[in-house]
Image (tube, rainbow over all chains, first blue to last red; front, side, top):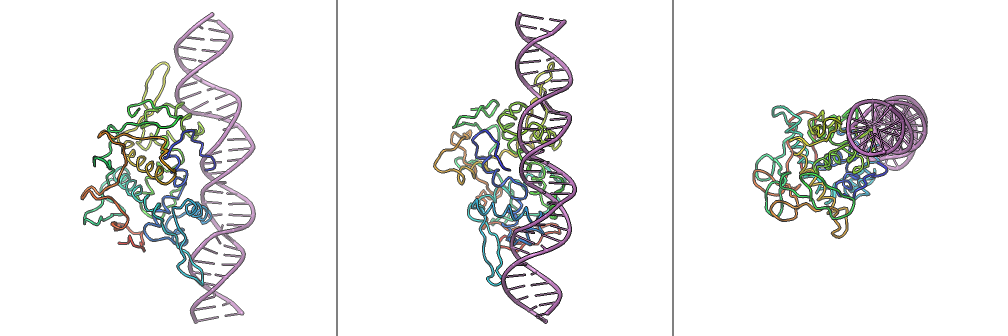
Length: 156
Length: 156
DNA sequence: CCAGCGAGTAGGAAATTCCAACTCACCATA
DNA sequence: TATGGTGAGTTGGAATTTCCTACTCGCTGG
């Protein structure tokens, strides 16, 4: 992903420029689960080792992961999410829920997340101000910068 | 993205296999904004036309977009999100908010979304059951299928 | 001394992306 | 009826990335 190419200023594009490359979000999944060692990542994600090394460098540079030494002599590392990285976990949860709903028949979810409240986590994206669920019809886009021409129902 | 490669059964990986390719989520952004025509997509996303054509085919096949005829003779199309596609919009909003928070200094957000409640949308991912915000420390992963070995704090 | 593990690097084949140009159908004008 | 223009792609090759296998390097354990 050399040039962003995106002619619009957009935080979605910017975010994807960092975590949108192949494997990056799966790395984050593993790291959030505590499986942050290189060999674990290779095994659990199934990514080529060199690509993985590149991704890890990038995610560390971006401040999403941190390289943690879990053993001096022999020196061994583990990747852990930074606070910024942890803030992406809700994105993963939302994506997982979407996949569970739309990509699987029945209830054969490969993974269930339990929330501290005791229930299975079914994430909902809500408006912080009013608490209401975020639905397309309730949104209105207001471009703040040039480069945006919005046409449709979500227009400004 | 030929082989998923992911040796684990995982709805995050499955979802990313569909919408995780370069440009796919940007296509969804534009389409949710109502800019669903091929030429608009080319201009607004900055993707090569051939790649875009491939992505659009894939997203339609996956049931995320629908090709809509807005003019017979000359035949002209517009891509629109299906209900399944619209359910990904919260993912985009969450990603945008993350980008706004971590990738930009100050408040130079390129786009502000207004919620129907009258406030600026700041999305929060919450637990549907208890309404609490989803935070890493409050989650516990329970693998339902073989292929999972979880080590860390979020372990089962 | 030899084998083995973790964490990568190196080299080349295979697959994708990128770019510019081209097509095809149709309309508008003249 | 030629001439130009638009929308929605397709095509052909060059430039990048990915993928795969093997290799390295530091260190430990027997």
